[in-house]
Image (cartoon, rainbow, N blue to C red; front, side):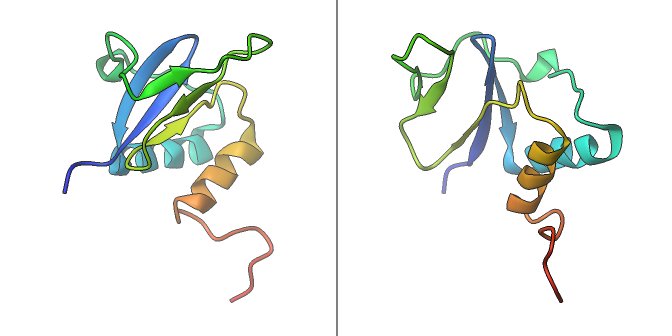
Length: 99
């Protein structure tokens, strides 16, 4: 089976993470806070062909045409957004969850 990647898009640029590396990046946000810098070594030279810009010109959003990979646009994410992502990845228990 092919690798599953998480593509991160902001300002028209794209970064690629393995699932494990994205989980580690999200875990860092829980410790270090929501501010971040995406590393240059993960930045792709151009958007992959599977990622498309939205036709709605009122805002810059993207979509991906495959279910094999994931797309994230964390530019405006706050602590709650990072927490939700961590919950979705199974890094932490959902708030309000009972054992």
